[in-house]
Image 1 (tube, chains in turn green, yellow):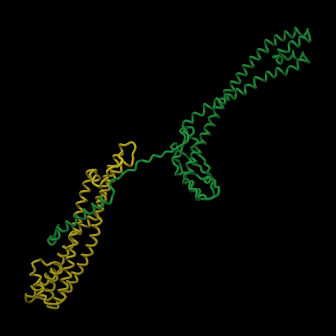
Image 2 (cartoon, helix red, strand yellow):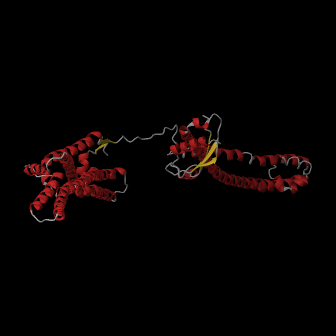
Image 3 (cartoon, one colour):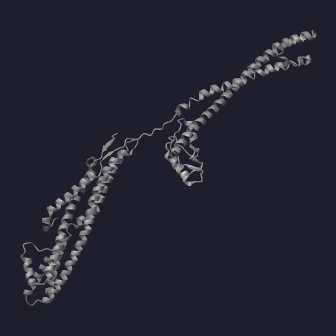
Length: 271
Length: 224
């Protein structure tokens, strides 16, 4: 390999070659900071005034008792009408007793009238007594009982139906309030990231439709529904939405469905 | 998990798998040799250029060719470069000149052949180690790449057992593997630069030698 005439250079070249490598190694060791220190993982913490997860279930019981009283309030007038009916028939029997007799069911509650009738006509008294007994026994008791039962049942049914409806509406209301709460949180978080200087001095209003995954991340790019008329402002809000990931979301699975497609209205300049 | 992992140069090399370490060793030895040859070549080519310069000066200042030949032949050192070409040519010419009944064209032809032979030997000396540098320049990046690919293959194979793959599981392996490519490039880049420079220097020297041969032939022809 080596030539005769290179003998004089061999040692010098060898030393130079090794020194070049030593220099490079030194440069590598000193120029690079080989000790890589991983930055302590930064935990992102969101400070919320109230815990949303607990509120999801709590609101329901307190609202139900509030609603149950309502049917009771409605029930009150219902038993009253029979009493009113009792009062109304009074004028009828006075002038025309026959009609009173004919109208058995109307007479049902006529307890207090009996003494008056007896004084007026003795002949009619017996008939009336009989009728009264009938009326007292049958119409008054039965209708009252039956009516009460029916009313109770009806009211119970109504109660149940109403309770169900109220429950549903309560849940819906709770959901709505919950949703509003989280929508506001999402908006607040996004608003913190908006570069307001890009939106000028006016009162721009823009609407974005965003899809959210259960993890709080966006399922796609936000869709601009209504532009503020200022492209820079639209972009600023869009960037803010992207930067706000992960967005706060409720833990309730049913509520999450509503957040899958969310329309948000922004007024960047309103504080 | 470690807050800080030791990623020093030596742990990277020590942590690499055996084939990768082998590749690194080969590349480091190659790099050492290529630099050694580079320094040898730098010295020898510089000396050949200086010798050619000196010889041309003494040759074209005039003077007796016999004396010049005597000086070269009596030198303890073996003549190199242009001096060796001149010595071979003049020796052959003088030998033919002594023989009577020799055609001029034959004498010139003999001297030319002798000079051509000496020129070829000189060129062989000048071209020494250049193929090695060329090989190092073209092959060592591939060798380094081979080491890197091997190391990365191992790094990713280790991932197959893990349910949740994270970058920190692959990163050390890839960093180790990339050291091989770095060493390969470190060996290749100087070799390529040196090869190109030496090739152009040798070309210039060969042109110089050839033009001297032609001119010396003319001088000999005029003398005879």
